[in-house]
Image (cartoon, rainbow, N blue to C red; front, side, top):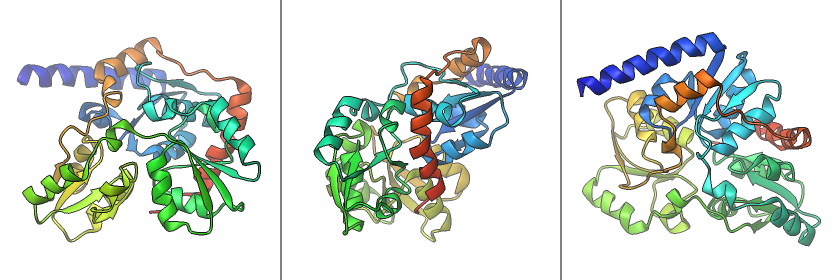
Length: 310
């Protein structure tokens, strides 16, 4: 154990030195492994990371997350060098939506506006009216002028929005997050039985039947805010397990129980060594066509202008 800690300390020191040399900033999603979260300048959800990307004065952005997140950072910072430490850190949900399919759906509903979950490629964002995150999806859809709203690509999040927005006809795309969608009510109920004093907080990417038994449904940042403000001391957290690392740091003294096996393997592809390698060789730079950057920036900026909903 001491040897591992020593190696990690050496890697951290080298990362910090290279970060200064490159005038770089490291952004990490809440689902990154603890060692990456701890070396990052900012840790957050998709909305928070998008906002942070626009505020940095760094020349280089090292994005520790999955592909669509790094693409969004590039769209919002076209003059900066944006690096994704591991090219195979791909989001399965984002890959479920393609431009051709979205254009076909738009053609079938010509009067509808398109709200796209930020978990989507830059190319598909270029065909959207506005983006949203799990924290502001209800707020974004409610703000649409059209009665018909195409919501892509997360069907579970779209169904959650339907519960709260009753004056829109929401047209859903059959996409999902494999990590969240795999959770069953029986898994959650087992944790509830093991920890009867714990409140259950679930992410809206989960299946509707899982959300039905939760005490609260929140984005990752919403979970952190709720836990810090709550008088309760124990929580079952129904989202990717690495959020617990940040929860324990920001709400010490409280107990958190994950759902066993709730792991995003793609988020786990990035570690300290790949962050170091990315900084050292400026690997792997995100490049996008100028037209995609120009068009995708509009829905992303609208998302940030609307802000959080929880």
